[in-house]
Picture 1 (tube, rainbow, N blue to C red):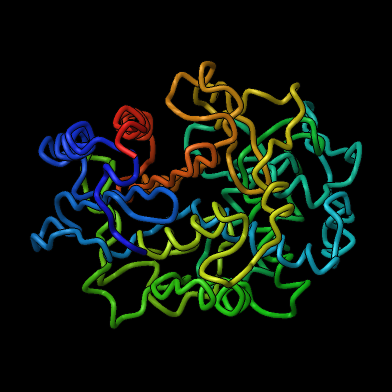
Picture 2: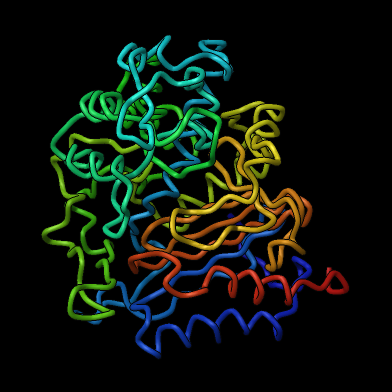
Length: 401
């Protein structure tokens, strides 16, 4: 993608330095090891910067092509894969998932008294994509939910199992609530990833490689790290029992080293800024990049509009403050009201982030793509996402365009 001066994109260079100042503060204060930032407008990059290190121990600088664990930023890609099959008329959004994954025919809902009951209606494909299926994650150590405890015991994220085995385990667990009753972030997109396998007859990784990664030139995006690329793979840092900044996953002993059987549609991909920029630009272009069309414009429109009824808004991760002004589409968070959200943005901008603090958004009104990648767990320990939005939008000045 062509690199231009900020003024050519309608941004002020002098004001854009606040992005650099923000990221330098995080790195120099020891809160983050390294960060890569990228901004693009109307299909051209006008800002790309690197701050700090991808490995503090070896003092290896982070670079524009450093490889990151993107975790939940896998979800928009998996949702795109499934919607490409939707365009083949292989399913309807309102179809029960048990129609394609029979293990869900007998799924039950946990009751307050500990009994299990039949769901009020079946889980639909739309429920999977918008997180209203009643599923959970079960990874929160401080959760008092009996269902979350069952999830934890099921060992769903064992990298040695297949997607089919993971989904089989999920289907044998009770739902936290009736389908459509609540927005609850969960393994729903992992189930959607397995649905891609069922409908395509290919593994999720093979389908993505053939239909998304190869066409879009996403050369470093995969469900495992190629040993030949370890010199570009970032170390994962985060909170440990003894420190706010410890090593959680190294390049030489990573869970992303092959062999990896589980291809998690919800959190399994590694990627780079250039690769993910190609994906987000394709979505910004309503499903097309450089003459290659993955999705039709109306499909992208459907994916990036809010699919939640007002009764389920605002959405919130369990145990966190509500995300005011936000709805959810088919794989993307959707900005409904910037004033209510309390952050800079535009109505209709779509976004999502990853557990190790990677984050992006697309703003169709401003034709703007923004993202940063770092490796610190858990995400949103610091308000860097909100702050990044602020320092980006304050530099927008059409008088330069």
